[in-house]
Length: 240
Image 1 (cartoon, rainbow, N blue to C red):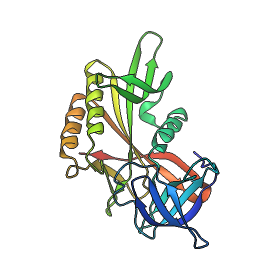
Image 2 (image 1 turned 45 degrees about the vertical axis):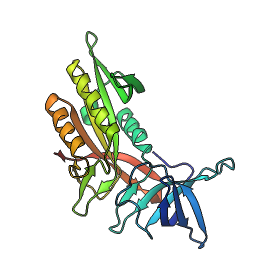
Image 3 (image 1 turned 90 degrees about the vertical axis):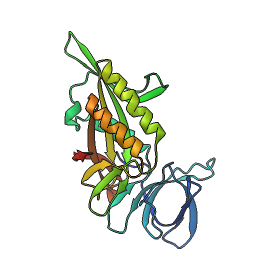
């Protein structure tokens, strides 16, 4: 995907109230921008780090600018906007980037499913003319990266994530295919695991989900601020 309007630069001063961040612009002035990430953003918000944002130019918005990317102290780029994960995965599905999910005949987004009032990110259907099989895909944006190249999920306790695993397991039991898809928006991550110490209940549930047949796929985004580009590009290994 291409950022439109184009990215602009600043330096992070602080993030606060979850949805706000103060930055310093190249001319030395300060401004407040919207932070489109409700998570803890662990290791994603260092003071003095370079940030990129977009300006909607919408005078009706209290904070017309939106934080999109950050560069950490090691020079890795991180995608802050968690909502972009679904856009990246959809684009990759349509362009045949995800080899494990090639050949679907239809794709729908935000489809109600399960017994807990969930909406699956993507419902893919594969048909050979005689039999149609459904594949339920839940997307998670992963931004927590450690110094040794390990990416971890979640970065905070996630009861919502636990519910999604339960729903995916139920789909497998009904005879469908179910996929937990980690969209890694961190160029410093080269392998992924579960953050067992952060959310042990999620880790245990993920183990059970894999045992029951839920698939885990991990793909990393290539992030190019100078080209205003963010695109899902390469698979990464996953281990519990």
